Length: 288
Image (cartoon, rainbow, N blue to C red):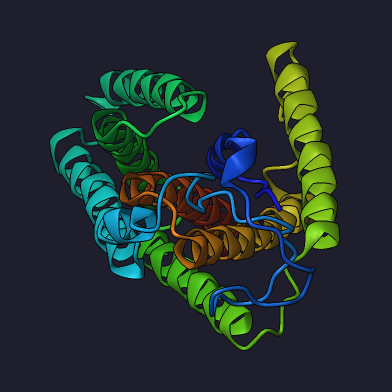
């Protein structure tokens, strides 16, 4: 099953491209080699046919672990947080510097977007690209957060950070307790919902660009709150899919370097959730 997160989707594509001899078939819902049951028909990381009895021993020390994912995710998120704090302090959004700050933020966002696309379409993770994405994304987040706190809703950034943690913790608990059934149907539904959401965002940008004021109204009032809540729910669904992808990678013995892909995808999802929470809280606080 592939995640709706583009990074994890690429990860899944890499696994689907594994040599035919590298697959070990087992029934759906059954366990193989002590691994948890899921909806995979094959183990894309099994030693290739004819690799020899010591193939598993050779690869055991290079397989991904949950600790690898945690360390690399903390490194990636830490980079984003550090650059966000520095940009908040060094690029103040005030009357004297607002133009420069917004210009740097837009440039950083574009660079982060390009780096994310390059990494998403690579067959192997590149830590330099991933950390570069996190750094430039942090610059963008720092300026946007500073502007929101200064001109729209003072104190809302702390609330948004806490809200992001709350959503993430809730999804993790629901996933670990198996309250969320992450299967192919779930992934298909999330992919369809995300496609519709992004099409509406694109339409909103087009209306705004061609002089329709606030576009379709997705960033203010009740409609903005509704749209933001839907965005948060989509982010939560992405996060559940990401957790599933990481769990499967660990269970099936993915290469250790793919922990960087996990960190990259999780960071993208958490940034998305933060921005949606920030939008909802900003509208609520500005209305008050």
